Length: 216
Image (cartoon, rainbow, N blue to C red):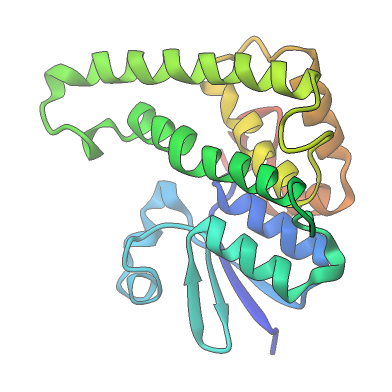
């Protein structure tokens, strides 16, 4: 029996935890929960994660949820993997960037893709989507500048920050289908060639270059 069970959906934010487990050499069982098929709303899954989201990491019959919390747990569980910097200020800078993605940028995609989560009135949905897309484009411009200047985290992003950023580089196709600026595209290529990420992308049937899945 595997030490961990990871519940993931292809190309979702769980991709970062999936890659982190692979990078750390963890003994884990990946279990697919397809968000597009609403499998996250199945009663058995809701008992593990009442919010009906991914990722969920089951450790010794305890279900851990929320990407930031799971990343912190894995960093402490696998200290040699280098998922997070050990010393400050590098650790604080990496955690700030990770938290920014989780609490600021991720909700903008929810507003873009699942607008009804925020507003039931369909008349306001177009404005909400437009605003979310504008703010996301502004973020990718900021990310490009920070990457070019070595200020996304501290220096070249590595470990979990790199893997989590890769999720949003993939999602950028929703607002920037023409591609991103040079530093962002360089990170996307580097992550696509990262051994752990490459194995996970193949397993999930997705690419960092777009939103299409192998099962589409």
